[in-house]
Length: 251
Image (cartoon, rainbow, N blue to C red; front, side):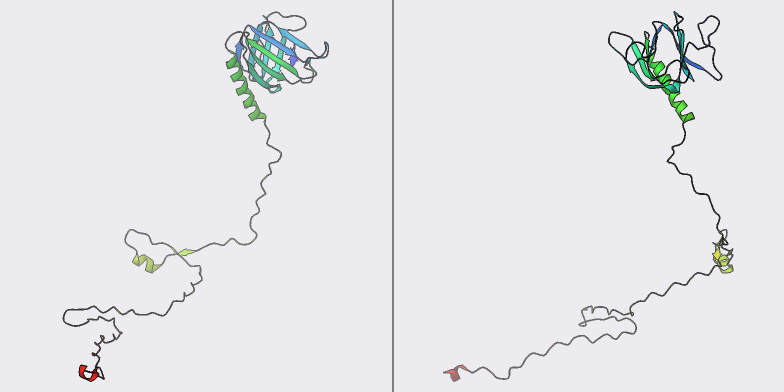
């Protein structure tokens, strides 16, 4: 931030741009106020104001040129990275105002933070505020450093031992079995452990259930090596050993 140190053209109506400086916004008839007194007693801080002037927004700073210059206040130059905590105030009965806090710089004319107020009588305050935010975000991306808590990746150390490699050869049997136009898969010569045998239960054969037919009592079909049991025989009718007594014997 600097007061009355902006280089102007011969007519005093425009700025002499700095190196690699580009103007993005320009507006006339703007009211400017910069106060560092913080509401204290007179003489506690500096205060600069102008009822009308030209505001310019470049890729490096905010510049104000007073329309009625005085020996006390003519121009103000505010670096974009020093303009913080900005907001818009839109009252009902007065002009919309861009407000922010300007941080001091060595030799800039102010020893403590100052309150900035730029009032627009026209409706271009939203364009100014949008351009300012875009430029500030871009400057933060270009000038921002990495956080201190990030750690660097460890250095790569190559392995000390030999790197294992695999050798693949063609198998004649695979080439013979493959179809024409199809390349057989390569087989690896590296010895692999054989799979362990998995124990299984003893094989068993399930005899089919007997199927009844019309001519014979049962018809059985057995698997090879299995002797089917004979069909069941009907049981003989029971023969009583003693007859019941007759009616005469009971009498």
